[in-house]
Length: 310
Image (tube, rainbow, N blue to C red; front, side, top):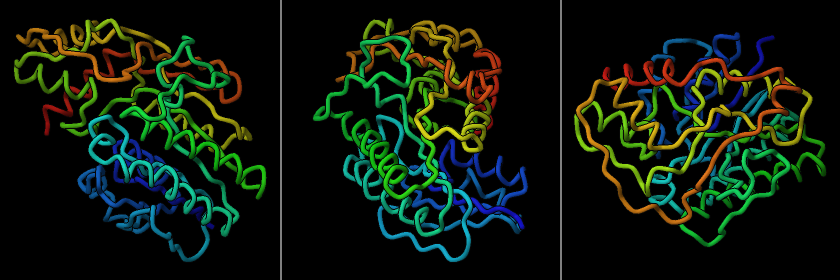
């Protein structure tokens, strides 16, 4: 019997790649999304397949799914600052109510529940790189707190369902990920820099550009997610690329790869913007036998080609 997976947020950037991954592995896939930040264009090429079903629904409201479900991957949430600052209440709701509803389905179906958490649970970290044992440095009432605390609550309720109800749960802490199907107006560094570079417009760097990030290509991420789903691990696991670089170096790399005439301009640093971000992936290496394979320039070149095509 074919296994069935429900992917909430399945029309989003990462969710759509997961839909493809599971279809390719022979699963029946139910993609659920309210399209607040997801795009139907990300999944419309899958509609022709008989093993794919799209359900437009807000998971912060009760979820009704008939029949057997083997896995739930809960990826529904705005995920970039421009989105969760525009939709602060829906962001909090999907982290709390949406996660609660999805866990309720997992409890009823006795299936595996997989939570997409984030490196933002570490806040503006005082430890670098960040291991899973680090509890974070988060401002709960700052503008970014709606996302940070939504995900921290989502982790807490997921572990509560695991301990109290015996649900087989998984939690991935996703670090900065990029690749095809990122939105042009996503607001994050790579889409911003690529679009500005392709248009030969000034590239906007916040602060002095010395803040660091670690960028993981989307194919590496989804492979890590699948390995974690199939593992026996129930505690959070970092998935990301530990190759840390400054945002200023990223901007210069994108200018070089696009042969752009863009100049770099500097603007004020946003409130609570993390100064460093780098995953400690020792746990993923040991327990999942996973590590990223796609180098930054290769991944950026593929992403640049995608943005040129749209």
